[in-house]
Each structure stands twice: as C-alpha cells, then as structure tokens.
Image 1 (cartoon, rainbow, N blue to C red):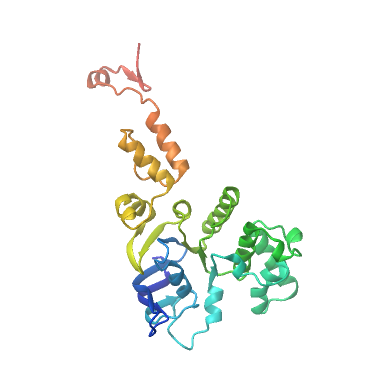
Image 2: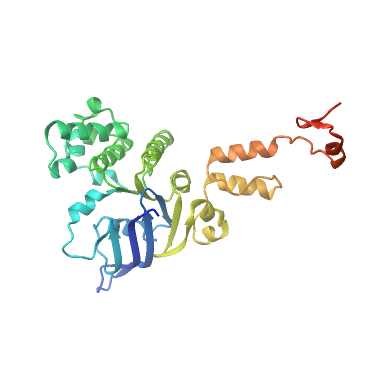
Length: 307
C-alpha cells in the first residue's frame, strides 16, 4: 500500500484568535496525500486553501487538530522545522515575495547553500533546478532578479524550491498571471515532475490546471471540506460545484452542453484533448450491425456484408 506523506486530521485555525477581529479559517479539516500522488485543492476565495498549504510545511502550527508530514507531528515543539521545509517545498502565489537575492543564480542557490552544499556540487544543483524549469543556466544565472518577467519570476521561485529536492511540492495558484503560452509551458513541466514521482499539492482557482494535473481533488468551503474524491468524479458533480461558487473545467462544460443537445458523448472527460477525441468518436459513422440471419449465413465479413 502506498504510504501517506501528509495526514491532516480535524484541523482548526483562527487568525487573530482571542481578539475582536478573530476570523476562523479552517474548521475541522481532514486531508491526506499519498506518496507520489498529485492532489488538487480548490475553493472560492477565502475558503482556506492557502491556510491549509501553510500548515503542510510548518509555516503555521496546528492550533487544534493534527498535522503529520513524513511521519513527523508538526504539533511537537521539538520538531526541526528546517527539515520539514526541506521535505515539503512551498511556492507562494506571489513569486516576488519569495525572491530576495540580487542575482538569479544566488537566489536558486540560497536553500541548498543553507543545507551545507558548496562548490561544484552547489553549482550543479542550481544548474539542475534551473534547467528543470526551463531557465538556461548560463543565460540566467547572472541576471538581475528585478529585471525578470512575471513568468520568469515564477520559474525562479520554483527552481529555488526544487533545488532543495523536496519530497512534496506545494503550489499556490501556480499559473496565476501567466499568459497562455507561459501557462502551457509551466503545466507541461509540472506534469513532467509528476511523471517522475514527485508528490504534489496544487491549490488554484483554475479548474483546467487541476484537470491537467490532479488525481484527486478536495473542495473547501468556508474552512471545511465540502467535497472530495477522484478528479473525474468531483468535476462530474456540476450542480454541487455551482452551489459552492465553482465551475467545472471548460472541457467538462462543453461535453455537458453537447449531451444536453443529444450528442452521445461520455461524461468522464476532463481535458480539451479528451473532449476533442470524444466528439470526433461520437460524430464518426459506425459500421452497420449484422443481423442474426447474416451471422448465421456467414455473410458478415470484415465489418460489412458481402455484395
């Protein structure tokens, strides 16, 4: 059985607790991620997605409930949070908040350097991480970070986390603000990391990103889990998602509209490529079905009746 890397049970969190401005963000959340799994986390703004992510690498400690990461209880005051953050890497929604060195190479090298890497080993780790996210090492290592575009900043932030070689990658709105080409490129690179076995949690408002990457989905509503299950099943619950202020991926909406108009297309479609294949199959004329007499007479050969 695949082991759980992350296990959250009955987690509560209140910002500015015991003050007149107290705001409850998480209310009894149960959540788990198995080794090698990609899990999507969706919900309306303010549903608690970012708060939950920040509990998974120790940026926030449990006020009530339990969070276990790689067998470590994050409620334990003696736990080494630096080790947890090497195990679970978090890429924030605003990458500019995560980049603070003057040069790209130094920023990507910061985490590994803090773990004791130096010299050629450090240089190769930085090269590996940068090229993994599509940043040419020689071209970008000496670039000033403040001159980067939004998409380049996103890649530098991701490279800086990957340079620590985490077991789990947490992504908060990874494609927010990217143009279509940048989004497609980043999704392809994340899919490549998934294929290599990296465990991943993706929190996003973009349903198409979840459809492209995630095997399972949790839906948060006002701090609790309103819906969870396999990605195809969750996105088939169109009515429940609409009630939660969410929508399904574009491909699911297209297929649903075509079914309403009588086209025999399957419901278990997630991506536009799958929708295209399903529509083409539904519109392709099917060969005639032989009658019992034709079968018995041996007149049916190769999909057609002998003439």
